Each structure stands twice: as structure tokens, then as C-alpha cells.
Image: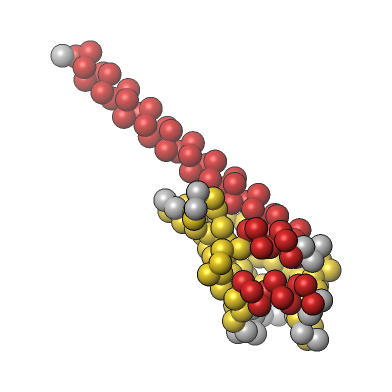
Length: 146
């Protein structure tokens, strides 16, 4: 009887450890995907964005402009969106099953449709595991007041 209880506790502890390891792995994967998105923005890599952004992606910039995945990619392809630098800091990831939220600070030098969109921002990006892989489903940026 005592061995059964000890074995049961061992199985529960092992399961908890496995869950913690999985969350840590997902957090690292989300950080890597965010880095891929950062590089895609700097390199004007429409194919990279196409691969990572979900079909129902929504982007809300600091001016309140709402764009879909198709609009984001069209702006990149046409040259209407240009990011020459984007640095991220204070990155935090929280995982909720098949969803994850990444928050961070961002400093960008960028233009969108002829307007200077450079500045410092607080960013929140939402990821969802869709079709067996992590995809970005939303981004909202808020300008940090000077």
C-alpha cells in the first residue's frame, strides 16, 4: 500500500515537471517566432510574414490603424511599410494552453504609407496554436508617452 502511494506521488510530481518543461519550451518557441517576425519586418520579408501570421491576423498600430494579414503583406510588398530598425526589450511570455501572450517594449524606426511611425512602444502580441503550429493572431502597439 505504501509503495502505491509513493509511486502515485512520484507520477504526479513527474507529470507536473513535464508540464513545466512544456511551458518553458513553448515560451522559448514564442520568443523565437517573435524574433523571426522582427527580422521579417526589418528585411521586408513578405514570405516570412505570410508563413507566421495567421490568416485571421489583426494588426493595430499606435495610431489606431487596423490592418489584416493581407493588408500588412501588401504594404510590405509595395514598399508602403518600411522598418529600418526594431529593437525589443523587457520581453515576457505567458502561455495558456494553445494560446500565448507576448508583451514587450519596442523601439522602431519605421514608416507606413508615407507617415513616420518611429518611436517607443509597448507591444502585446497574441499567438495561437493553429493547424499544429504557433501563429501570430494579433498585435497591438501603444506609443510610450515622452
